[in-house]
Length: 117
Ligand SMILES: Cc1cc2nc3c(=O)[nH]c(=O)nc-3n(C[C@H](O)[C@H](O)[C@H](O)COP(=O)(O)OP(=O)(O)OC[C@H]3O[C@@H](n4cnc5c(N)ncnc54)[C@H](O)[C@@H]3O)c2cc1C
Image 1 (cartoon, rainbow, N blue to C red):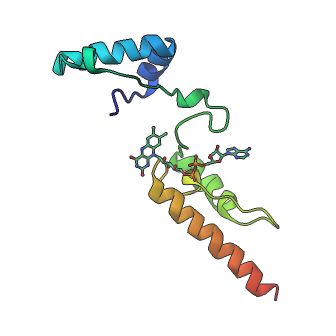
Image 2: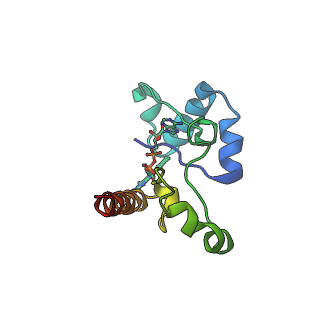
């Protein structure tokens, strides 16, 4: 069960607590709606996405300006390198964006393979 889903300042504040303190807070808050949660809670985990070394955040963000300036070049295959992911899409932060981006990367690889035959 997802107990807390925080963004921005609230996320920074919350993730400054230790994992144990975060869980305590979530259970206390949850128990206001479901009083039995205090007794029935078994275990949980928390994740601060901005501290994950491989993503440094939850998702990519574009502004109209950065998209207009950079999207075309980052989404184009460059020699043997092609990037894919939610961040290389028009639907960042969603699996749909990641899948569409992967399909586009595959299309480009296939196009290159066919052209190089
Ligand atoms: C808390 C949360 C909730 C979400 N909820 C939803 C939801 O309800 N619905 C939805 O559609 N989307 C949701 N998303 C978004 C969705 O999970 C992402 O958009 C999707 O997983 C992105 O896929 P991806 O392949 O682009 O990247 P990822 O799934 O992040 O895959 C990238 C992979 O590359 C690895 N990696 C990074 N650097 C390196 C490296 N140097 N060497 C080797 N491997 C590396 C990472 O470890 C990771 O496994 C959620 C995301 C989060 C964080």
